[in-house]
Length: 400
Ligand SMILES: *Cc1c(COP(=O)(O)O)cnc(C)c1O
Image: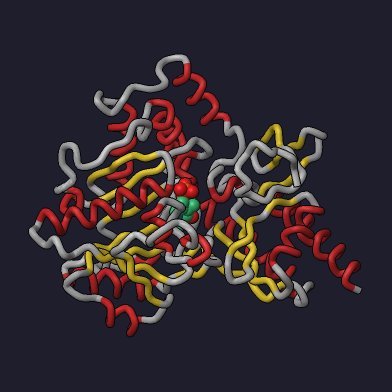
């Protein structure tokens, strides 16, 4: 473990210090080269120091860093318009993080009902294994005891049901339900996808009962699954799976802290003057970078390429499953949000990969996440697979 004693002891860190990045690669202070399939937990969507992002950020840094939201920020208007153009949404509120995007989503849902005179509709239904962030409201939403313990009373108005248990869901839906909140694919929870038909059924359940549907696409969004947003995979002609409200962050800033809450006009209408605010959210530096990320992700063919690379990656991972059944049970996920279902401890396998100079991210359900930059090349895939193979071979030699 490293010795940064003046930092809160909230993180367990290996003794590795990265000082430079380029594409899918990270370099340590000792000049060692790592393949980064963690991408800052799905944040470095375009890899490290992407030229277009560097140029945009440095140009903006010479013009204007920050003005408050008391004034118009042209790039903010532009980024909101582009997000509206590309999604179900009609309104956007910018934040600095995922958890703040969720806070805005939760407040928007409750205020929508309040504004209609339905003040009792405050309950947000969430799903076991969920992760929505670390504020007091979002740990209540996530419902995980390990994150709630010791932090006082759990914020009221969050009800959790088992993942995929439709009967349990129907049982808790009533006239106090404000919203359902769900990740289309659970990230921290272990890359558990919600079946597309269930997303559509939830849309219908919400419509039938005057409930709002909130997606947490903080991890799944901005091209990660090969669509701009993961729930788009579930849209059918004439049968939408679109939400009323959606939280976005991570990949949208490409490494710059940036989040957004997207909503329909109807859902956001009651969020009028003074109902919500932020000092930093949507400032000129963040907005310049957010627009630059969209320049790349919305380019013709970019998402198709993500899908193609994901397919190649998946095939090659399949070969690893065949070669090391004692360590890997299977692969799950969508696009470049992939999870290795581990047979041995996911932490042991993460360490074996780290030894082979490859970064991955552990998740729940004994899964190891692969969240490479969306810009990785086929050569990068091959190099990553080679290192995974090396790591697993070394583990096998040790375990003999
Ligand atoms: C990371 C994450 C969050 C929290 O985002 P922060 O930027 O860490 O606040 C919320 N929901 C999901 C699905 C996430 O992956």
